[in-house]
Length: 250
Image (cartoon, rainbow, N blue to C red; front, side, top):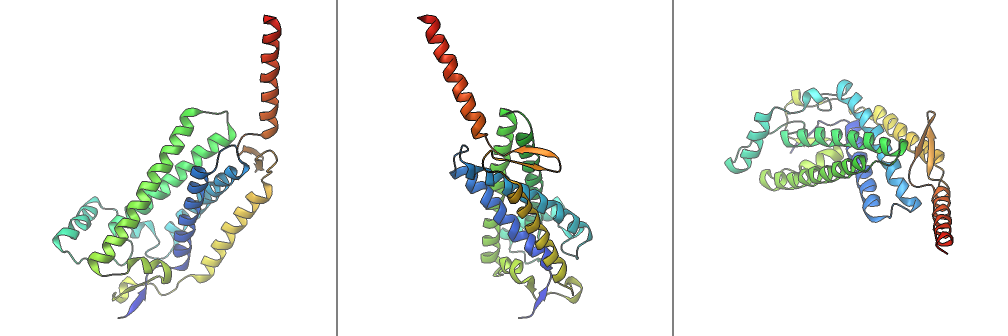
């Protein structure tokens, strides 16, 4: 069975980095106490995720055929037809992203950017309960869409007997016409893109100061968690205030 190239290397690298960064950020946020310095690394993962999405948006404009957003199947009619096809037995196939994966990709990228924006607001401004609630709701929505996407891949694989998930590993799909494939996997651009993301993540890690859980980026101070020194000072002030109240009572 002939397999033809449809996804370039930059698209595949983005796919797996995107998944890894979200899982990293989400797991840290849900399993580590926010008073721990380790919790700050979920913010660094989130900032790297946002940077990655910006690069993907650029590639979605100038990339290869199936990497471009113009090649996504975003017509609602196609999505309805794709979903109903599981019951009607439709064998229609998409060379690139099918309607379900197209919508999932766009929604998750949008949510990732919104998470980045709300996270930035939390790191640069005073504590805001509403922003924090919005941030956590966005993360939950992201998880739901991601799990639905994975479930869809499993159902598609069983229903159509097609290892669709493998296409994001080797970039290839079975039995496609020559007009639906790409010739150049853009390996060099993929390597440059990966190096750029790693350089960004390294910069964040180097600039991060664990002692006060902050970093300064492009002249902007980001507080990635509660400053331990400020926390201790606040505790001392609270203790002194309580002591003064007790003295007044005496």
